[in-house]
Image 1 (cartoon, one colour):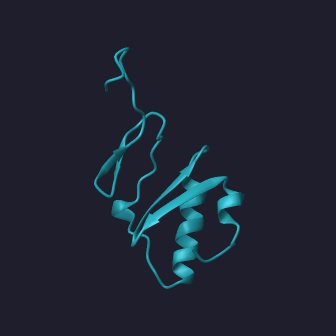
Image 2 (cartoon, rainbow, N blue to C red; image 1 turned 45 degrees about the vertical axis):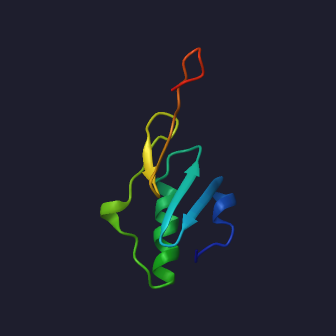
Image 3 (cartoon, helix red, strand yellow; image 1 turned 90 degrees about the vertical axis):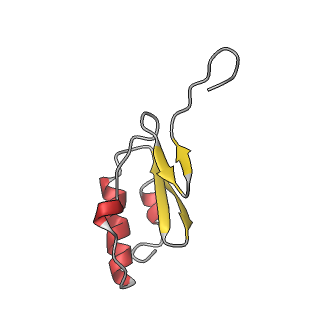
Length: 81
């Protein structure tokens, strides 16, 4: 991503990407990381698709990425979901 090369460190974030899809995992609210990503993409003449961009609380909400559902998982005493 363009912009500051240490963006992951600056936002204490982990970036996971596959082709043109990406997820930024971080412990704090994601608006700053989203804006940093938007800026970097603009520098590369790319556009962040606003209709597909979402900020989620992954510890509380599930979300889809590359056909998988990610987020909190709760298991019963038998170890099943």
